[in-house]
Image (cartoon, one colour):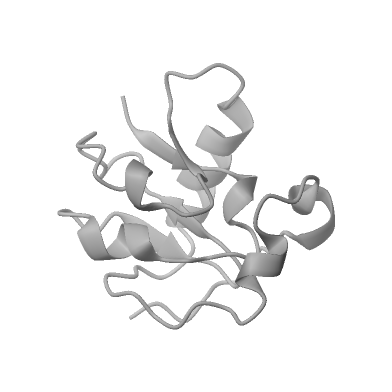
Length: 112
């Protein structure tokens, strides 16, 4: 089992999860984070830290798209191990539906 980041992270990117991850398995895109499923040790410390509730265990149903997206982009985006400034409009995007279809970016973030 591993954890995955879902579309709830898009445009929020709070990064509290990055601070607590003991194995540094988060990778940064332009407007969201993903978890490398090969590196995640299933400790679960990141899940309760996410204000957007964007991190879920891969055992929940309907997460196939997110498991694939996390695996794909964790291989392309840079690793992030320290929390950065949260986007100024993060709270405005928190809880909004349909963000993947309208806001997702394949562009990498800056990483560490």
